[in-house]
Image 1 (cartoon, helix red, strand yellow):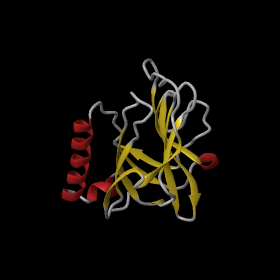
Image 2: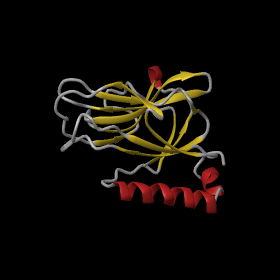
Image 3: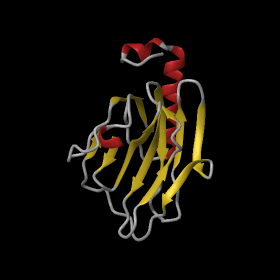
Image 4: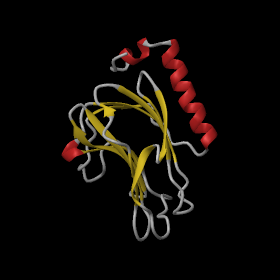
Length: 168
């Protein structure tokens, strides 16, 4: 789960939000005008899986999201739940997400890898904006509850966004 306020597509048009080593990461990229895309990459032994939104994620707005993915089989695809301050959407392959690279091989484990929020260790994917309320959850139920809690808190207290530096 994550809450971000995106100012641009990041350093070199890549802005890492969260990663677990090189096993998987979520980032923004490809800024066009006042929009970016979200990209999720899962590391596999032969070919990485890559899934992207369209370039329709607005910069300078609060985005709350939950990404779910089971890397146990190459045929699995992620689901991305997004709230952009005015609407809620569920993105899947064929409905808001595009699989730009199909995973091939065996998943690369993230066991023993650091959980990184923000820039990668090579400092080549600096996120431009604010990252807040990041959590790595193990089950879909936990992810759903986290998203509902965030939306409920913001609905009850819209001033919360301005307190943490985001526009309401």
